[in-house]
Structure formats: structure tokens, C-alpha cells
Amino acid sequence: MKKDKTEIEEITDQLIKFRDERNWEQFHNSKDLALALSIEAAELNELFLWKAAEDVNVEKLKEELADVFIFAFLLARKHKLNIRNIMMKKIAVNEKKYPAEKTRSTARKYNEL
Image 1 (cartoon, rainbow, N blue to C red):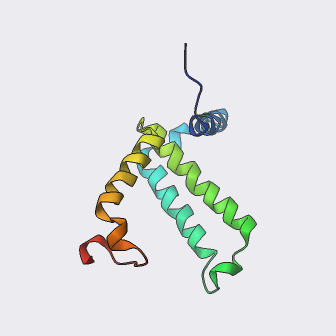
Image 2 (cartoon, helix red, strand yellow):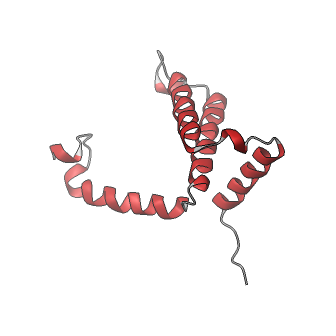
């Protein structure tokens, strides 16, 4: 019996369906997906440029954040990476680098603690 798909798998499957219906896989090599991810992240940053954080247009924030996720999910699928697993591993690494008792209420990097 096959397990139910996670929400991330369902979303990624929909992205792949959308991509394949347009024959765009040919453009989705790792380099270009990484570049697209970086560009979309820059567009996300642009929403905050020259204004207070609370003044961001939330609808545009949703759109740009979705674009970031889209390219991140596609890049993960391209390399057969399990998003949940790599995120949980990174959280565990960060918990060691940034122990709560040393990092509470500070923005210092791990090498400055």
C-alpha cells in the first residue's frame, strides 16, 4: 500500500504537471532553476525596498514568495531531494550552531557567540 502524498509532494506534482504541459522542462536545468530562485528572491526583497517592513503589499508578498517556493521545489525535485528531510536536518544543524541559551534575543552569528 502506497502512503499518502505529503502536501509538498502534491504541490510539486502540480508544478511538474504545469511545467510539462508547456514543455518547459528543457529550460529547467539546475543552474537556471538556481538563477530563477535567486532572481525571485531579489524580487521579494524589492517589495521592502525604501519602506518600512509593515508597509509591504501583502498580495505581492504572497506572489513573490510563491515564486521563490516554486523554483526551490522544482530544484529539489530535480535532484530527488526530500524537502521535509533536508529542512529537518538543517534545523538540527542550526540548533547546534545556535543553542537557545546562547542566542536568545541576539542576532549574532554562531562564530560570535
